[in-house]
Amino acid sequence: MPKLLPDDLTHRDMDILNVLWEGKGSLTASQIVEAGPSLTINTVQAVLRKLLKKKLVKVAKIVQSGTVLSRSFAPAISPDEYALTYVKTAIYPFHQFVSKELLFELLVENAENPDELIHELKDYIAKRHG
Image 1 (cartoon, rainbow, N blue to C red):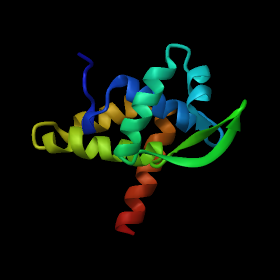
Image 2: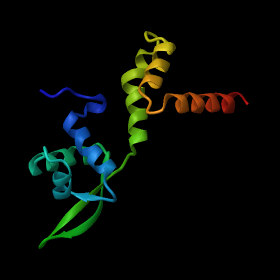
Image 3: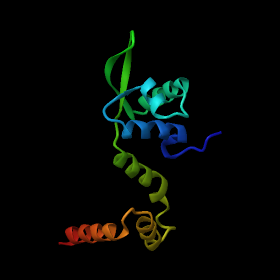
């Protein structure tokens, strides 16, 4: 049984969302399979149905794929919007048990450029209290 992520998304669901977020424009199910070598067409089609139902992806257009018409999919939510939802549902409910210092440490230690992040946080705080 796959480990479920917030909003009942599996790792495979996230794999497909990531392919769509990284893609340029919209992608057909076949193009998603090509972009994610561990994906099969049956898995992609099943996950796309689930993501459509949850309104996380949308049908962007109908395109010619060989001799047939195919739906082309695009994300209906940005990675930032999903991350914010993830934090709100998975982490924020535990804020009373987790120190702010630990959350700040987590942010800074996982940043690509910790000094830049600290500078951005200082700017944000200055704007909020300015």
